[in-house]
Amino acid sequence: MRRKEIIKENIGAVTRTWSSQNSTRPVKDKEVSRKPDLALLDDVEARWDTIKAVCELTSQLYTPTGTIGKTIDSKAYLLLRRQPWRRFVLLFSLTHEYRELRVHMYDHAGGVVTPPIHIDSAPNHFLYILSGVVFGNLDCIGYDPSINPLRRSFSDPIGRITVNDHTYDILEVIFSSQGLVGRGTVCYLARRDDEEYIIKDHWVLGGKDAALNEVRMLREMQGVRGVPELVEYWLVEIAPNEVDETMNYRYKVLGSIKGTSRTHVRLVLKPRARPLHAFRTKLELVSALRDIVIVQRTAVEDRGVLHRDCSLNNAMIEDDGDGTNGLLIDWEFAVHIDAEAVGDVATSARSWKAKLATSSLTKPPPLILQHYHDDLESLFYVFVCICIEYRGPLGVKRDLSADRSQEWLPHLWSADTFKAGSDVKTSFFFHPNADKLKKQFHPYFDTLIPLATQWYDLIRNKGPSSAVTFGEVLDLLETHLAELPKDEPSPELLFAKKFIAALPKKRHASDLEGDDDRDKYINEPPNTERNIIHGRMGWTMEVAPQPKRSRTT
Image 1 (cartoon, helix red, strand yellow):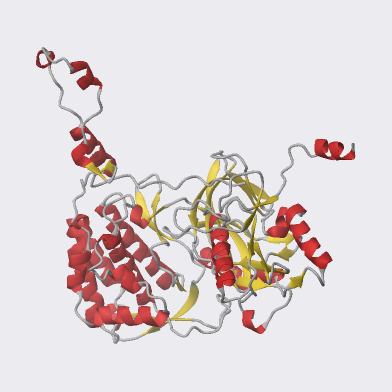
Image 2 (image 1 turned 45 degrees about the horizontal axis):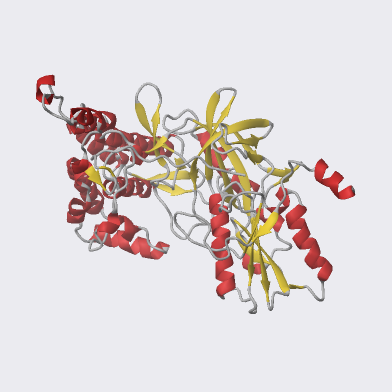
């Protein structure tokens, strides 16, 4: 009788159970196939965005570098990648004839593992851990109570997120970083009081002061066109006055993990922008590059700030209702700088050196000093990568793997180590390599090859003794902007023309006389076989596929 009463009281409650259904078949995933021995689930299909925890089984002894350690690493990566709103994920291993239990905890500072808990010598501990995982609160297994993903599939909103005392509706996940260790940046399109915002949720290396560096830099840059507006920020708290830090989830600070702690921070920003590679015309692309150079110059010369993180992910285009302009985001690594006039004063060339001992960034001096011309050079790499890795506007990716004979520049520049990357880029400018730009640019960008080669020569001919100036790069961009056509068709117009061209020619009624299949002809779809490539329409310009809306539990 008591059992029936308990069941009746808990009708509708979610019950977590361990499932072995995917121990012999991989969990569905487009990129990586993995088979968890046991997956902790609600009453839903096993996907990496629905699995609460994973347990791996082996009769062998546990070793961190063995098969069991590697498989747990990869599944922790998949869990955090598909559930980026979690603070951490828990995995378990049952080893040594399935009698030793270990708890593996992974977050954006890395992973830690407990000593073995033997079922014979510590049966109660064994039971407490497994019961707590199944019956405990979700925040005990890494879920963030300040983010509430909704259970309804394809709902609007897809969840809710808290910043200070405000609650925002999550409309879309517009960016999520892919690594396990790192900032774990997730950008949400959110709404409050019928107004849309961008919420940047991430983990900053260091304590509270380091976490607030981007807040200080955005305030320094307030009012500069092409810099996001900071609406509010929050050092995320797990309890009143207790900031969420990765070190809170570790029993003690060991020497091997000292200096790896990260602090959880949320920024609410405006406006929403699109990536630079989602440009609509070549004129818009080059105009945005010019605008970003102006932002860099204003930051350095007027505000005394060096951005230091110009990349493909941080260069954007803003639609402000009165045209478009370039936007430079992510000011987390920005620093205050000092200026020392050097060389010919008439050229306005200055050497800008970072103040390493100021409150702008309380970290040890970097091994490599960065100057303003390094940011300008980074923008050149962004421009070249777009012209090689994309095949037109709206972010249409190019398949570089189709030609393995090429040593693609973006691949060479994305080296595994800083030294390797530095060596490749130094060699690129030390030896004449302008021909590689001509060979590797997609044909759509042929008209921008003169800009690329002249920009390349400008950097190469300066050498280490004299740096490229903002004025020189702006003059170059302005010259080529004046030469670009102002009436380049929009991608939508090109798409419409291609579609209309694929339609069958209109036939007169007299042409249908004696045609027994005229009704069939009139009703059949357009014959576009010549335009089909691998099952899709072979337009030169195609709309970039939108990511599916996150399905959460």
